[in-house]
Length: 97
Image (cartoon, rainbow, N blue to C red):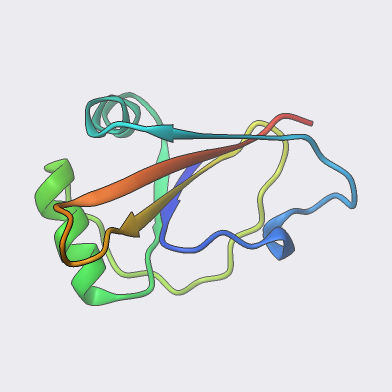
């Protein structure tokens, strides 16, 4: 499952020891992931959900439910850039084992 949110926490992990792979991804890759995969929003702020919806071309709903990440889950973290920089930065956190 792919989750898209605005904050990653180690408390989301369901196992006491895991391997994570973190990397920055671009908008085109994220759009393709959302188009071809099952995903859920865990974006807790309306303004960020609206900005993500506009950038990604899909409706990103506000959802404050707690997320539990299991093996092979992917968490996409959207981080707003400082005001002097445009758009958003996206990071992929993959739970490998």
